[in-house]
Image (cartoon, rainbow, N blue to C red; front, side):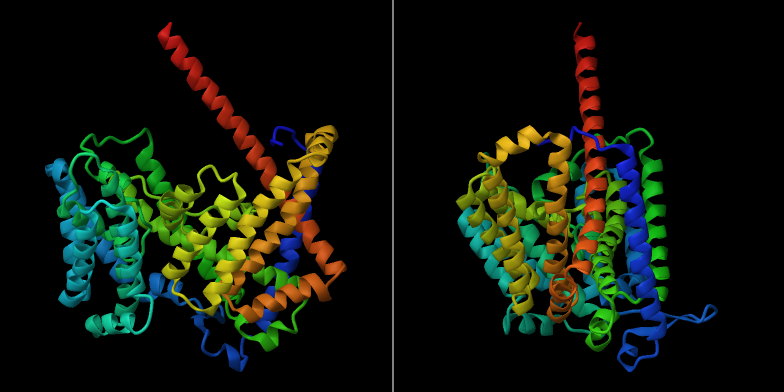
Length: 510
């Protein structure tokens, strides 16, 4: 059933009110827990002095956020500003060679930052996978790529390679795994696209200029080679109407998001509290639900902010990079759950869609998801927690298809047709609300810990039943219905724009 039927306006107002009150209620519990326990011994390592003039300490439990926007901030700004200036000058002087210029600047920046041993290691990965790409056998390219990726994800091979590039720079180990990991994924994309090239092969220079594009090198996102090669070598460089204004607005918006997160870190210790299981076990059901939800929302915000900064630079270079992930609040199906759209696009193109086809065959979908999560497990680094995360998310993705298939057969499809679109949407909203919390429980175990995920699951499903369970599902149901209404309006708007475009073409033809 589609989303053509709109719910009554009073119903949407009610959903908004319930959702708003619930979020404020849960937030107040988290604020109280943060304020009352700021001086706990378990908080000493992750709650540090922040705004002295307000007397608030700051949650610094997320190393990645602190690395990006504190420790590594000046390095990033210096390198990216240099890239923007360098790229702009040479784009004006020699637009035909701007892809080469991007690669040269990126290569020099990597060499200065990490040293010649790291550069030699990255080049060795490029040479190996380029040599395999010349054979033009996809299975061989995939096998060589996954083997190379395993060499930096599995012991003792990763430690041996890391020792080659260890230096005095504090973040060199982080940059090592980021630079090598994304390099291998880009080389695999290059090799697989080269297999589809009919006349000849792409050059080694094409691979190097693609790989050493600095904004994407260490932290992603990944653009598949076909998209990057076409966009970076495009000499018809024009801006859309108000494009620079939109880029500026997005840059200011990302800065605002960073400041908002900084404020929240001073008042809500959403990352530190889940690490203290003694404290977490004493919190209310609503507080635990709010912590679980806010942790996943924060992870989306972090991804949106980090990729947003990078994407702003890439857009200035006339590229169309992968967009930030869809907000967790807007998700109620596993098929749209991802926190890195670049990796997601890569996996969909070369694994998931390649094997799964149109994704309506149960067995093919099962094989496609197993292969996709197998590659994802290797990418994340095989360990017990990653295995559990992969298993449950793979199961969730397949279970959605099984349920959809089951209810598409009579008598369920007949009953749904009789009850009408409005009632159908309400019933689906109930299932979607349960699915939303399944997504949260399956993912907080990788963001926090398996123990915290178990605690939230027990409290919301067993100990909190029926009051906490049903009240949380009611609030989630309200949120899902609001999301569905937004999707319905967006679908109608897209249909109107498509119809307008078709009419415009007809008028020109006449």
